[in-house]
Image (tube, rainbow, N blue to C red; front, top):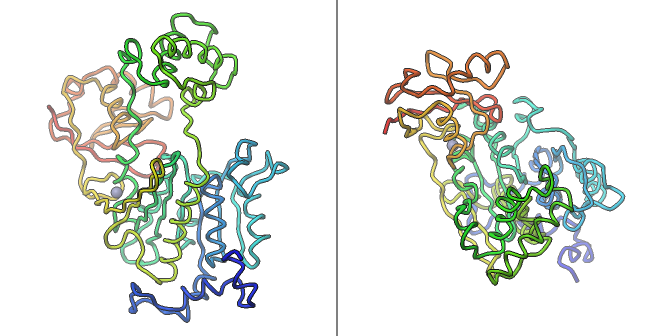
Length: 432
Ligand SMILES: [Zn+2]
């Protein structure tokens, strides 16, 4: 008999096993904060926010509902695509085109009686501080770094040292193929997502010379077809990554080259994957990472056991590539973190760089990754992305060198980006 039915069949009820955990102290329970009698009532009145209703989000929503949370909100602006159905198990074929958050909420509500799920079919950026303040815990099942950075900046910004309830634990799960992570962030107390940004370093590009001269992997042949062969032969005016004819052309070119070098593994699907930068989503990875996130949520909500992130290990890495491997470690808070730190971060620059080169370096540095930075010093505006009039008047600065702009060694600059509306990143220039 499946474990989950055992309690029901024996007349003990659906929550019997959960209540064993919630009401009884375990070997790691801190008895100063654990109160078994009040846990289930406390969890019933607790509001928890889930961000993302995709592969991870479906799992998280189901796990939270079955962990005894009764008041759950979910934000996702996406609609259901037919390609989601193999793993996003709350959706059916008849749901294609509907909002993920709506369908997921209804499905879980219908299967777990007594739980209320409020869907929001919009962007996280559409809500303000007052909205986020109503929750006790935030769980993210996102695939975008931008969205993570935004909610992280919002939650850190919301912390008021005099109000204990203003610290909202942020539980973040992420998966990429057979790899995944879960981590807990106590905004302003422990290392935040911005402190850990280098964990999301963009994948290293293959040097062009490797592509042009000595391909070793099927990916090299596909990138060669996309970058070099396409440019030389221009089979269509502009590459459309969604056009099967274009992908087909790249596939045949890549296959030819792979044969020439005795490389195996170039397929149509692989070509599409490399060109569109698709990493296959693995249902089991999502299930494992979501379970880990919800386990942390249960521990935070009930105090039944110490949770990830306080005071030590805060980051769990999982890899299912070769058997199963996990590693949990402490990612340290950075004093010069742009979001939660207290000091300006040092930025090595050359005085003869143009302002444009400085901006480019901000977008490529793994620990910054800003796409549309605006820059100012304490006294003047160097470059603004918007409004258009200001962009136009500051644009001539882009071609001037830092020295020409009057910037000096150890000068502090403030950088803003629309992706982090209210955060100004502080950097101290260091001339090298
Ligand atoms: Zn930080």
